[in-house]
Amino acid sequence: MKSGPQRYPGASTAYWYGSRYPGSAMEVNVLCWHSTEGTSLPSYDGGSMAPNFTAKPDFAAKRLVWYQHFDFDVSSRALRNLTGGVETNTLNVGQVEIVGTCDPTTHAKWVRSGIQHLYMPELPDWAIRDLAAFAKWANTSHGVPLSSGLTFKPYPSSYGTNGVRMTGTQWNNFTGHCGHQHVPENDHGDPGAFPMAAILAAAKNGTTQEDDPMAGITKQDIADSVWRTDNIKAGSTEKDPKNTTWVAETYLKGTFENTVKLLTQETAQTAAIAKLAQLIGSDVDTAQVVAAVQKAIADAVIKVSVDVTSTQNQES
Image (cartoon, rainbow, N blue to C red):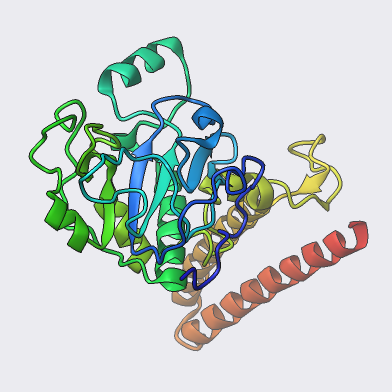
């Protein structure tokens, strides 16, 4: 019992209920997903109704902040367990609450009020990424299958007797990922139309934040931090006296403009040499002269590039 790491890396234990409610040790092979139907970390009635984990969105950082309330392989308390029926909380199930809503009515109300929130049917890519990272960790560290095979119905049709809730026998034999809407002896319909397939696909085949240190970096981040702000000293330019630094986009723009000028000059000079050859006779090797002019222009391009690089190094 309780094999493998019991704490999810990076998860806060600021709201730890394992001491107050010790629970039952088990080997988790099922993950049950919930939505809190709120926008803040719930109190869980002091831990008496807490899951193993809560994932709370940080919209500014575009990531999920994880809180752990019990060890991974210890029963938590977010499911109803009726007397004389099947076991729920204690039947090898780990539970995760996601701060947000699956209810389209609540979603619409929060949108009108300008309240930032996660809506389960429309989770952003970064939320799917972080949920996939957790599912992958649960798989590699505890063997929880990256599978489901269940339909996640939209709320409110997922509530109560919904056509997807498991029987006692099905629940006893199930392994993998399910939602609160699938658990017998319960009537809740969360997490609604949850993108389970996308999360599992990302966990199996995609790159998670855990694998890729560049995950979550946007094109705008690259533009702001690399493309426009390298701050190499360059002094002022004739066109823009206030431009005191080189940046990638202005440097490449200037290089392109100079190249176009040189190519224009080359075309004009080639035409002039060809015309000159016609005027003075066949003794002039036109191809040889053209090649010489082209080489001279190419050498000039290299010299300009070297001079600019030297100037940058001196002034930086």
